[in-house]
Image 1 (cartoon, rainbow, N blue to C red):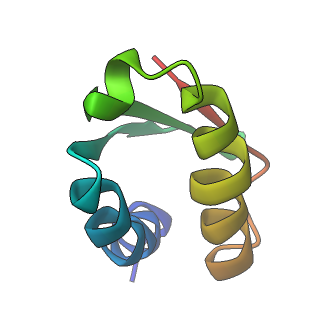
Image 2: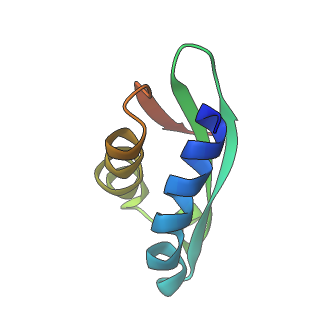
Length: 75
């Protein structure tokens, strides 16, 4: 399984929680240096707490599941 596939699998675990609040997350890219780029959509895209969701929810889950990942950023 590639790193990108591992990240996608991790996002699939997070997705139901975001969808419950009217949002979602889309994987944009995984770079060779371990940076994951995601796009928060729906309610998450315009939520003032989206940075907290990104760092405390999305990034922490991905880094736990895929230790090779260094950072998750929203684009």
